[in-house]
Image (cartoon, rainbow, N blue to C red; front, side, top):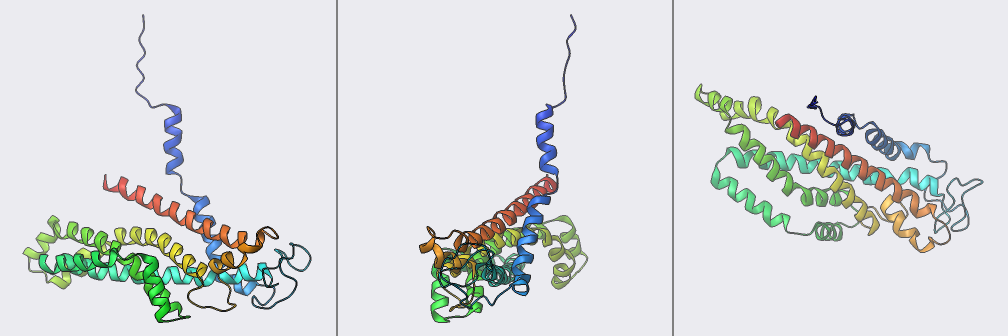
Length: 284
């Protein structure tokens, strides 16, 4: 009787792992397409996005590719023109939150335990505030200001970045090569430039990708609530809110911006998850 020992893994498991290792072309391509559409869309709009051109909630066809909205404005032009504000607010808020996270996190790790504890307590106090409350307060204080929305998005997401990057900086500072650099007399600024910042660049990039998803959600929520740049200016979030009452008459006016927001958020989230997986495998 012959016994066959199989040490290999099942083809199904191997295929699943191979699929997971494939670059996320679909998610990356879709996210890039939506970003390009949002940033360059105003240049492609066939009509002025604020101009009333027809009857409300006309069906797609003829001169209007996606029909008209609640005020008779061309939906396609408003979709092409309405994503730039949300994307720029989300990106600016993510960059500002990243700068706050790197600065406060590194200082908390390098200056001393007392200062580090003080920074974390301040961060915890800010983190307990609901993000929507921050947006409402700043938007009420600076009505019509996109800069206020950027500050609100940054303040809502920065506390988590501070904790992540403080932990990353602590890990670098307790490593052997940093201790060797200090032993040979390197200054604190030299350690910061040559050892700490280069080695936390990866965690900072991953954290920014995760925070970008949250920033997109917050920017879209602000638009849905009519905050920031008001009036007839197109905004994907505001378009959803404006056109929901006519959902039974025309789907495109609220469905098109909603789908673009969902696609962008999901694809960026998938890319952030892939970055996290790669970082975990590298650390292992």
